[in-house]
Length: 606
Ligand code: DCP
Ligand code: MG
Ligand code: MG
Image 1 (cartoon, rainbow, N blue to C red):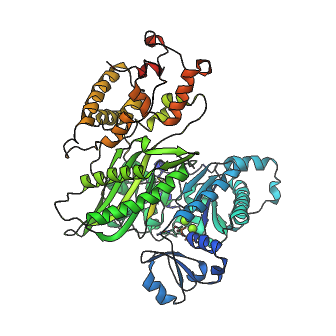
Image 2 (image 1 turned 45 degrees about the vertical axis):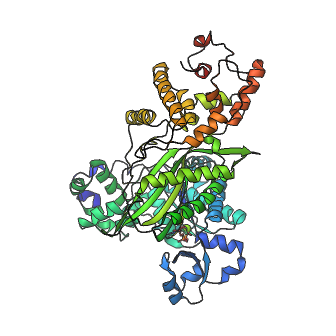
Image 3 (image 1 turned 135 degrees about the vertical axis):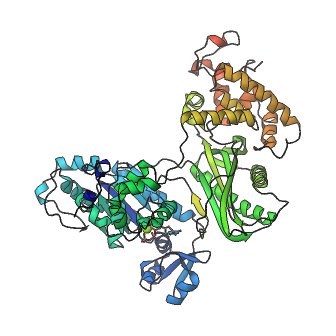
C-alpha cells in the first residue's frame, strides 16, 4: 500500500514527488582518517588500525572492523575485541582537513556544483552534465554502474532511469579519479535528490556505489530503523518524535500530518513527512570559503583559570595555522565555553565575540602572519572574553573551550581594489555587518554528548530541518545600529564602517567616534559593559601608520585604520592621479563627487 494515501492531507506534501529531473551524487570517503594514515604509512594497510581521540576510537580501517570495532568505541572496549589493534592519535586534524580540501578541489573538475558536507563527504549536482551526455549517448545500451537498489517494474516516463544510469557512470569516473590521483577509496550514492543519494551511499561499503530510482524512495526509507538516520533530523526533533511513539522512519511515514502539526510548525511537519517518504528538494549549494574558522577542545573538567589560558593558547597556535592557510584577515573573534552545571548534571555552551583589529595581522610575501606581540594581544582579547563569560569569584567547571575567527576582511589587489573594498557589500560587511558582535550574551544551550576531540567548526552547509533563527533584514540592521551605539571599541571598525553610512548616520558615528577617542585615553570602562574595549588596538591605530603623503583633507585616523595594502594603493594613487579611477578632489568640491565616492569620508568629521 502506498503510505501516502494514508494521510488525508497528503497533497500538501507530495507536490515535489513528481520532480525527478535532478541527478545528484553523494561521495563519502571510506574510513577517512584511517585512510589518511594508511596513505602516509602503507604498511598499516594490512593491520587493524584505529584512530584515537582522547579515550575513543573515532574510526578504524576495514581490517579492524572485521573484529567488530565500531566508530566511537571506547579504547578499552576496542582493545578487548581486538587486542592487536594498532592505535594512532588523530587529534591533530590538519592532515585530514588538507586531504578533505584536495578531494573537494578535485571534484570541481566536473564543472558542476559541489557541496562539501563535513570532512569526507560531497554532494555533486550533475544534472546539467547528464543532460549534455544524453545528447551523445545511445541510451539503448546504457547500464547502471555499480549496484542498483531495486530493479524497476517499468520505466519511469520522465526518463529519470536513463539519467541516473548516466549519473552512476559519472560517479564511477569521479571515484576512480579520487583513487588514481589521491589514493582514497570511496563510496557513492546516486539518486534524484540529496537525501536518497546520501542514505543509499553506504549500502555497499567500502569502495562501491549504489543508485536508487525515485519510485523506490518510500520503500527504502521504510527500512531505516530510527528517524535519527535521516541526516537533517537532529536530536531535539528525534526526542519530540520519540515522545509521540514515532521511532522508525516507517512510523513517521504513517503518522498523520495533523499529528505532526501539533508538535511542529506546519512547514516543519510537511518537511518531516516529505523526508520520511524520501522526498527532498534542497539544492546542492556550491561550497564557498567557510564563514568562520574555529577549533574546539573538549576535556573532562577544567576549573582553574591558568589551565584555561593554556588551553586557549594551544588552540590559538593551531588556529593561526588555519588562518594562514585560509589567507583572509580575521576581524572578529569568538570564544566558546561549555560550562558544566554540577548540581543539575548538565552542561551548556556560552559564547562571546568581539571585533579585533585587522592590524594584529600582517601579510608577508602573501601569507597572513601574526607577530608574537600580535599573539599576545589576541590572548588578551580571548581572556577578556573569558572573564566576561565566567564569574571568577565563584567556582567553575568547563568541559570545552573553543575559539573561532568569525568574520574576515577580503584581501584584494589591483587598481580597482580600493573601490571594491569600500563599495562592495561583501568586503565591507566583514567590518560592519557583524551581526550580534556586540550582543555577546550567552548563546545557545546545548546538552549534547561530549565530543571526544578537538573539532573544527567551519560552518559548512548542511540541510538542517531544525530551523535556525534567521533574522529579518530589519532586525539585522537594528542589531548593527545597536552595535554602533554600544560598541565603539575599535576605531578601525567605525572608520571603515562609516564609509557605508549616509550623512545622518555619519553625524551619529562622528559622535560615537569622539566618545571612542575619549575612551581610548581613559582606563577601560566598567567591567559590566558587554563589549571589549579594545584599547590596545586603538592605540596601535593612533600611534601606528604614516600618512605623510596623504592630502590634507584626509582623516589620518581613517587612513591608518585601513589595511596596509590599501594604504599603499591610495598613496600611489595620490602620487599619480592619472592612474586612478577615483575622483581627485579637494575639500571644497568634496560634496560634488558622486554619491558613493569614498573621498568625502576621509574628511575629518566636524
Ligand atoms: N569522525 C569523528 N567522530 C565521529 C565520526 C567520525 O571524528 N563521531 C571522523 C572520523 C572519520 C571521519 O570523521 O574518519 C568521517 O566520518 P565517517 O562517518 O564518514 O566515517 P569513516 O569515513 O571513518 O568511515 P566510513 O567508511 O564508514 O565512511
Ligand atoms: Mg566516510
Ligand atoms: Mg562521512
